[in-house]
Length: 63
Ligand code: SF4
Image (cartoon, rainbow, N blue to C red; front, side, top):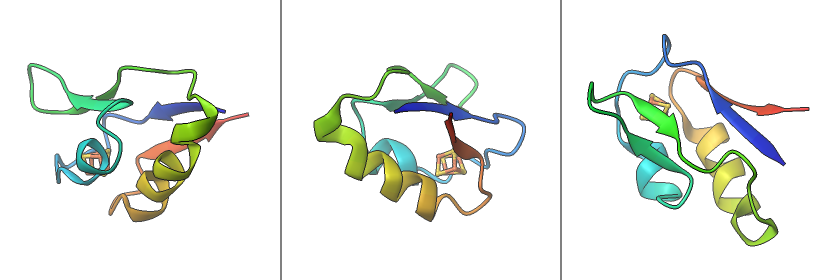
């Protein structure tokens, strides 16, 4: 799967970097960014959780 963040929606809650630190990190502005766009199989569950739990629905799977 591929994952993206709509950074205009991110409120920097910290959920996604804590759920999947290999995939999400904060940039210099304190906004979450994707650091690994092609999500390896073993991280897909964590990324799906991050999508589910993002309070602003900023994270989405790119089909
Ligand atoms: S879970 Fe959503 S709002 Fe929270 S840091 Fe990640 S993208 Fe931003």
